[in-house]
Length: 412
Image (cartoon, rainbow, N blue to C red; front, side, top):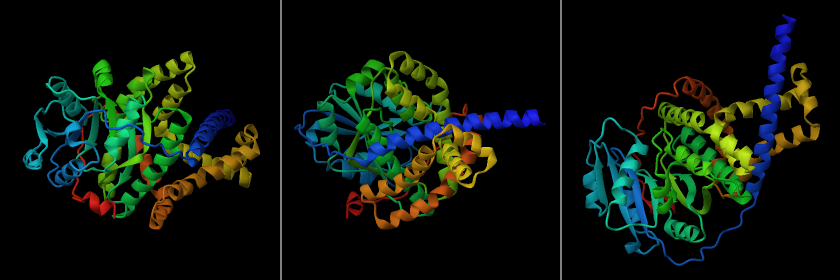
């Protein structure tokens, strides 16, 4: 029994030490998000855009988005709006046409999901007489800040090829679920995305509010048809040394699920897709990073490791408590890491979410979401566990949207 205990303790020490090191790395990187240099728009409109909107039975929310997109602060003749009406059984296409956008109807029951819809639309786009400098992608439930294309044009003119805009929530205060989502996004935008942008590391794509240079899409193809098409395409770019970048100065708002059941169904799809993409790409990204000495690729491999993030948070807490309360089981780990590092990293780790909300001027009632995060994190545990064993299930599950909010209501 003593031998088994030694093995278990050895594995535990190795695991918690790894988690401690990885957690320390993430905390130090996140600290770069404390600083923000506002990037001025210095280029006049030069780029033309194909604005793609992915939609499946979105009659309840598509009209406000099209109205919003038609009023962006960018020359109207320099962008066109295409709505991918993907296997719709409602009147989404009819509403799209009534509001002056192109309704591109696709019916294919064998290839269901947003990734397939985008791939189909891009093939049609390349065959059109009119060609565009870049493609912008949104979801049907989105609302978009009016300077979005201005910022994307500027970034493209400065050499960026893949750009992700700031992701915010349309309905942060509808329920404790939506507030938990919103706080997670607010923190991620500042302490993950902006932090990595400041350090020159690759950013992640959020599935909407992104801009991709057309030549890049033609060179490498879309090729992202998993449940997490955004992660798959971003990883393929990073694998080739093309780092997605971040635009903190323009926002996209989307609708978060209100109830726990819908939320868990959505997050299960995300995790299944994440495990699938990680299993296929983490080896090559890690190998390229080591052989080429590219920290950005190693950081991307770290992100593919992120299904362990909730466990990492938990283990950091246990590590701290073990040191503080002198629990024997945790003491060997504490001897491997300096005391100042354990206490300092843990303090910063829990302070960063508070600072993220403050720095991005989140409404004060949004801070209540920080109290909800531990409970929200707990709901991730069964999702991550179940997703690992069902990662081969690539059946798309649609998240219903119902909040027909106008951009004027968001920006009051």
